[in-house]
Image 1 (cartoon, rainbow, N blue to C red):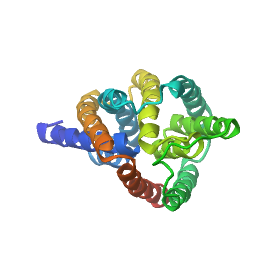
Image 2 (cartoon, rainbow, N blue to C red):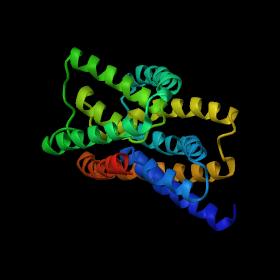
Image 3 (cartoon, helix red, strand yellow):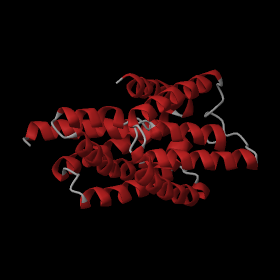
Image 4 (cartoon, one colour):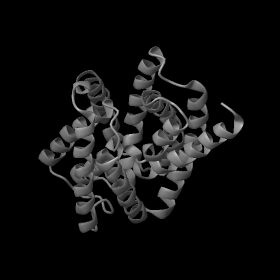
Length: 247
């Protein structure tokens, strides 16, 4: 691939990293772009997944320094993520992806409406009961299964679940989910490498861009605050939902 195209990949990586570290919506632009470049859809998805390592590497230290990561949840979320991803990759391949995409899109729209109606949701940390938190873990596990199915929109869905059922602020939700996401990406990438599904040249350039974008996005999230991030997330999630339902 020539230099100009690789430079465009790098720029898309930066944009992807910014969106992912802000709202969980980076795949909205990177996967279609890779397909336009000529990568087969499965290669594009696998290469993008591999490159998300860059976003986590760029964003996690910034969020950790700002004390936005809820460390007590990292281990249980990581365990649920790995198990859920394995189940998703093993079982959900038998389900119709198009139908699931539409269901997730509709669910994201409904959750966004709830977010916009409740002004304090995601802005202030709220106490939750043990039963509500247990439900949050179960729904997180469901989201992890969908992530294993490599289904778009799951990042934003998990952010919403953490805010609604676990009482997180929205920046805390995105920051905390990045570590379990990192483990899923490493596990998935290992499988993809074994099956020759990753375009390493494109993936490394995209990853470099995502690392920069991840850091920049985390910086803006911390600087602008939860209200700004919530409004941006709502816009991005609605775009993701429209893409899942109609495209």
